[in-house]
Length: 343
Length: 254
Ligand SMILES: Nc1ncnc2c1ncn2[C@@H]1O[C@H](COP(=O)(O)OP(=O)(O)O)[C@@H](O)[C@H]1O
Ligand SMILES: [Mg+2]
Image (tube, chains in turn brown, orange):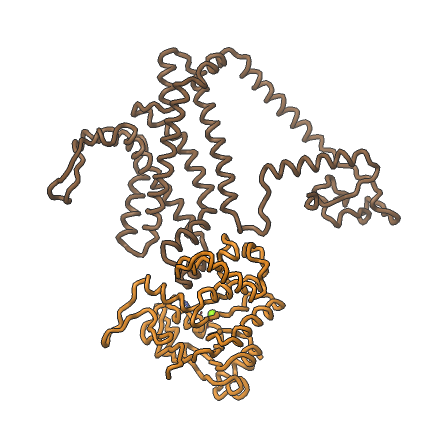
């Protein structure tokens, strides 16, 4: 091990004075005037070049091979039909996320409650809805009107006061939202429960000791702290759901994947239209990922002594370091500084 | 005796087969400081936790300022109170935990404001004013906007004391408030508690700090094996204990 740091950013403050190792002769007069020669990493360069060549080849193939039909892609990617289909996909995702997590949170607290009845009901719900494949459930709701022709309100097992035709109330879109929500709630319940039990028990005790009302304890003390554990998994779930909405094509709802299929069924341009769908799913997923990052940051408040920098702050710091390095290259003397100080 | 603030009467408490409190009697007068000493596992924390009904008793009862805690009496029967009513009673009882239990996601100021606003329905503005005054009193006026994890242990415990005071409780309970602290931080927390004692706050303090007990306590209580072994003024209990168990314990901690 050489005592000479290979890069400035790994140098601890103490390492700024070379001359203690066997390979480095001491320079007692002025250690700061020693020149640092960074280590060369030849293997890294070879690997980088190889990867760049492969990526370039792939990109070239994408751009030039006629199979991809980029012209067709361009015709459709922002067409009204597709944009409208994206909107339907977003709506399905939003409804199922919000309703699914609301119901899931209720189920989670039922499972955590002291009442054996509530516990059992929640457990059974989760068991059933995790057992049924989503597509089976969706088709089931789609056909609901065949099973129950009328949806009625009245005394259980008794007279019905008011009723309507169930298919007209639910509608295809409604059936899809119900199906996605019920499915999502079962998973959300476990995610929320996982977050809640990760919160230190002393927090609830402190809240109870101060007489904070029960609901407020949950909303203000427990859930915000549980969010730290909930969010990464919830992010996964929501992104999964966004793409999972494509199964509602079985109900002939005009969401993205269904619409794309309809179009290539008509014109036979399968590959470019699948690319259209892919591009949109990638864009939407990316947006969700960015949103997730900032929401997580928001709930990390108070979790660390010094919060980590945002990507923008990090980019700025990186640029500053580059500029500083460039400035230093023009000077004969390299004053070593720990990176943490560069503000 | 009208000036008894805390009255613990024949309290028994078991966890499964383990009887942790085996008939505890304790009276604390208004404005006085009671220090509870005793070996680990003797039931000190459990006793404090029964006083604010974080633990239910198996038999016996506890009253604060003449009001039964956790129960309503009608004739010869004790009816268990609903959680809502227990929560209301707890606003009269400040509790300071060994490991602070501050809310890490809320600023120091919000930690102090939360319970007055949500439990006592104080207007937020008034609660914030009180909070700032209390922070000033524990020497942390400049930390109102910090998060708990940005503070030292001693500072966190002082915030926790201010948080307990924010409800203007009738009695303050401390469960080993300095046991989680580095030795050099113990003094600043004890100073705050001494200061409170000087202003006539009724307090029950579980601690191993004998010097603090000698200086501040009106009554020292020695517990062992789930019972009060002896109690009395600090000079009597600490310097001239009558029971062998007290003597053995003191010889170990002094
Ligand atoms: N929730 C609980 N369940 C089971 N045993 C407990 C519980 N709380 C405390 N105990 C037991 O009760 C005894 C007294 O505990 P505690 O009151 O914390 O003692 P101290 O505070 O004096 O050290 C210990 O043996 C402890 O293990
Ligand atoms: Mg204890």
